[in-house]
Amino acid sequence: MKTKISRMVGNLTIPFLIFCVLTTISIGVVQAASVSIEPSSKSVNRTDTFSVNVVVDPAGQAVMGVQIKLNFDKSVVNLNSAVPGTFLGNSPILFNNTIDNTNGKLELAYNIAGGDSAKSVKGTFATLTFTVRSDAPNGTSNLDLTMAKLTDASADPIAGVTINDGTVTVLSAPSNGDGGGGITSSTVRIEPSSKTVNRTDTFSVNVVVYPAGQAVMGVQIKLNFDKSVVNLNSAVPGTFLGSSPILFNNTIDNTNGILELGYTIAGTDSAKTANGTFATLTFKVKSNAPNGTSNLDLTMAKLTNASADTIPGVIMDDGQVIVETGTTLPPPQPSRTISWKFISVPYQLENSTVANVTKGIQYDGLFGFDPVNKVYVGGVTNFEPLKGYLIHMNTSQDITNLVRKSGQPSVPPSIDVKKGWNLIGTSGTDPNNAETMLGAIDLSYYSIWNFDVSTQSYDKIGVNGWSGPDSATHVSTVNFTMQPKVSYWVWATQDTSLPAYSP
Image (cartoon, rainbow, N blue to C red; front, top):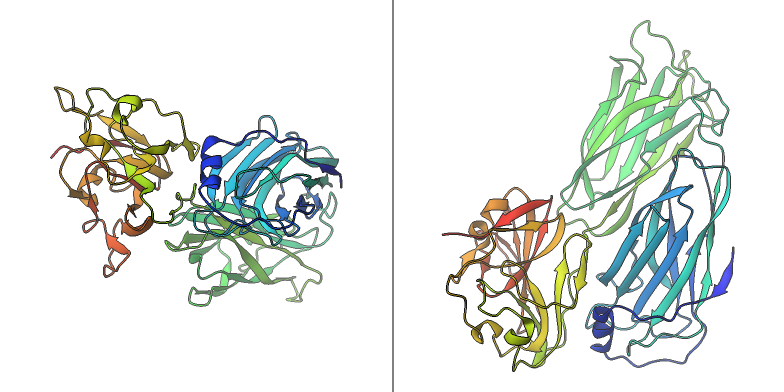
């Protein structure tokens, strides 16, 4: 493990600084803080998927934001995902999450959401999930933190941050069941070992048997899964035990998150010594699943031979499910005259430049949103219909009343909508429900969120296809009203295109 002092004190993005400055917190006594890869070393095989944590120890200092850069050996691993931990709270603000597997680099930055307090207790900033390349060379490579920056409530860097790198050691790859090349004991694995999913996704994993030279006639497993995260839809036999294995148990218990599954070879079919898929398990992620990682936990894996005797020493390799929803939503701010407002223009303006539209407006921040990279974008120069904007301004003023629309009240024919969060403006000048306004993408979005300017908080969530009773926060999209000149967060389940609404 290599330890070093942070080599970078550069500037964070403008949005990162603005959000930090807007939150006030007392600063404690300055001590040495650290950012570490934990565990500091991982021993893996080719094609393995594994995770490490980026852990922040503030050493008693008050931390509001974290930014890191990491280099990894592109010939050894691919970085699948970088998911925020709980160090900065349950809903930190994302400002950068750039994974560059071509060059072996990660840039990651989050800040505490408005109203949340600074953090001074050690915790996990992010979980990084890698897959070892099938052609990775044996040996050790570094997970090299080239920069780790912690900021306080004034958006000032905390000095003297210590950085602790990690290492990855590649061993031999699994064999084809001949007992060599890394697997010397019979093994039952969940493959892939890690799945990154979104809410409402359906996904599958395989239960794969590596006999390691043993003659297998029967397989029995028990699996625990997190009932608050997924439902198990089905467990279908693979081809490991032949085309028509005999079923002894296939019990799916979604109430308790348990699967029991047992098959054996049929009739006069011969025992199996080659690797193969015992079963394919298909899950559906719950619509209210929390962000984070849960286990697919093999609590029992029993292999039997031709005499129905148990094969000893079977190794079980579990899996994991990582739920992520893209960017986290912007933070609510304390109620005051200058506050956040979600705006849009419902028609083409005669003069759409920011300088013209905001003339006479008291504001100190204006951002668009990039739905591809899931980051806020500053430097807005023109307001475009159908797009949403976030402005920190005197909320008693309405910017769209300060300008005239053009001679032809037109809007672009459509905008691209990307999987995950999108900040979408309204078209037309009359209120309408989301079911109608978003009808063209009815099969491609899950929810729409409204921000209440008066309370500076999210107060309504319209759930597409909602069949339950409406509540104070969750309603059907039929009962979710979209107001003109306002923008809304829309969670898309796939890439699509939203045309302007035409009554």
